Image (cartoon, rainbow, N blue to C red; front, side, top):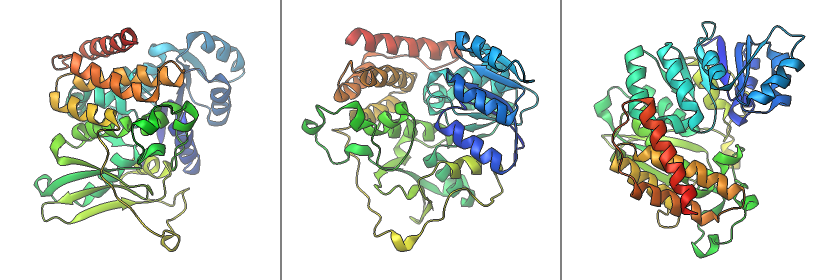
Length: 381
């Protein structure tokens, strides 16, 4: 079990649940980082008493510094502050729960500082998987997946005797709020409808990604890098109940699955306490109340973000980075009421087809591709 945690993205869904788990095990919180939620961050600082509190928003950090003047916590700001929290000597595990590409620089900094990482920032691996995994291997760093699907795969692989015994990874998807809908039925979807996820309680960006199935496309790319498996050996199946979180298939066609209630505190706890297991804050599954477990093929034609991600990973180079950057902008434009729900998939597909960019050899390469993708989407509308 890790004892000293630096939590990046502490005021978001994953971050707040991480702190619930940390409180249960009486773990030390060395740093807390947030984007701009000064009220919640102040509450967290007073409760957990970290060495550093970081607000990415520099103006709000000045206000936080005044509010916390009576504490021993030092207030930092901007990317420099997040990197300080990600590389500090006192932390033995960095929980990266920030949303979006902002997570890639602190991830690489933490890796170079030889910090193990509990990883919920999927965009970093999607955009720079080759570079991130190469740096992790070079520095002897372990990435513990926190996404429910990748944690499930990681748990299932504990029983895999050797790599060649693995035939296939099977990612499960809830299908989101629009499972079974046609393109015609999705033309006038509202933001409120898209945010109404049937099973999971997540942040707004990730919930919209689930509705478009972009989230699952990103997870395909993430799984390819995390587990060093070709894209063709990663399958997606829609499982509406979200009880099976993912599966692996062996060469003899037997399948191992990880099951549990749809609650992120299970994968968070497993990442923090690996390889041990302890009592959880989450209730056990009551099979007597589950009438059925259903499975369906994904609809690649309707949910174009999913097909765009498969196209991007097949295309290679920085195409996955382009898909991710285009989606981040399109997702925000939809939430701001500036484009339609179906426009998200069209814009991501167009960006992937438009660019043909080389491999990522540096952070600068990744950030450049990301910037081009964002500019392409904004110019397209």
